[in-house]
Length: 618
Image 1 (tube, rainbow, N blue to C red):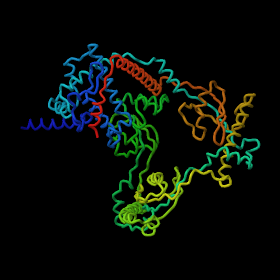
Image 2 (cartoon, rainbow, N blue to C red):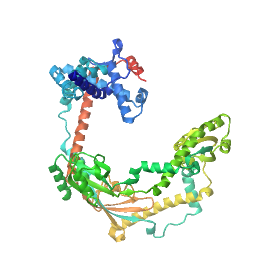
Image 3 (cartoon, helix red, strand yellow):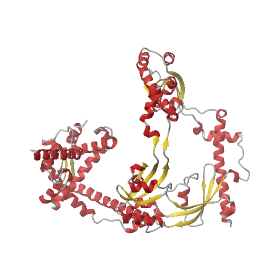
Image 4 (cartoon, one colour):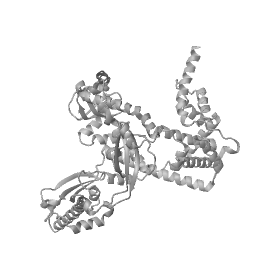
């Protein structure tokens, strides 16, 4: 009896695992298709069954739900074209199945049995194949062992054909070398800013003719978009929270509940890069100390990203004893290790040191009081909602709501992009955009627990204000354009003087240098096109003028630096580009083969059966 009980418990455990495995295969209420409705199409002599299509659609729905956490319907998938992609995938699968049969490629029973028995989802807790669990999982997925094993046989045969087609495809080494050299090249350049102070006569003041021309030439810029004049009544927690009484005992209890928040031990912001062995970790440290690699290079060489190694805030007790002693035993923000971690030898990078914090109740009280008062205010607003609804149902105007309730009245000329006051709420903006003249106000919620109702009073069409009303705005626009033109012209004049024998350094002490700049780098406070333009220069000594909003930049190319070879970072990039190139070429070859195959043997689809499958989904 004990043995049977153990076996039963084992099967239950296996079924739990298989339940997760088969979630993507299960049709959840999808009807099985038989008879003339069992086939949605064929490619050559390979059939595509309705049940296969239904299961494939359900797998996609389950994957979307798992990814987004929200329910999704077949209609949603169809709007994204996913149903067609699923069908195309089945057509390609059938085309390969036809070709494997035509070529006589098949897999024997022994290989199928091995594949089934070595599938982890079909194993019991002792690691051996569980026949009962296997049959249960297939039955739960609506498959018989014969159907599953035939599908498996075809899948293995298709994989053999796929390997035969693209197995020998690889990107030429020169492809990866060229792209790696392009990506790792850096440049040094010198910069000189030309500002308003460098203009020989300064920037003149605009006259009336200048402003009139700016106003006429940029009328669209100064035109105010359509406005909606809206009256609203609203209440939000911050309006009434000062009138809410907060119990002192409740404040103390909330402070005690959050003891870990207000009293935290010393922490570190850490990144952890784990190695399979002590020798590899020590080799990485040696490369780091020698300057051959940076920590970021080591991360890339392991095929990881910064997100993969980031540990966030870590306290002493979160680490192994050895790691805690090494990391918390120093006040330096540095790279530490290799030291033993729970996952093996690792290098740690300390990005910041966070001191222990102790916030007394007196310091925390204002925030706690505000939080509790805000919660009480939201409850008070919720309590009046029914009364406000009743008043509005009885014909009360927004003005009357403001008189008879805690709601306040306001008006706004709302335009798309407005975000002042109540227009800072998404709910108000959506309601304001949808409102029509004559609509009866509706009570709606704000994101912070407030309530509002609005009325559209008028729609003001797009309007160009008179020049006198926006004179300062027009003048600012003219000045910005004039300054940009003048400093750019002055920079070009200075470059002409340099070409005639001058040097950039002779123009003043404000020359700065940027070194080892990569193509993807961005230099703050400089024109965003600067780096791209520097990589367009052909030879050392070439110059370019890059206009900016308030100044122009004269840039001279000083050096073209080839990417370092043999470093972990470069080697990792070279391997990655080579792999991506091979995958891309193999994909193109395989797609071309599939398209040619489908065109050769012909595709037949049954829209009636396809629609019948769709009808089974909500």
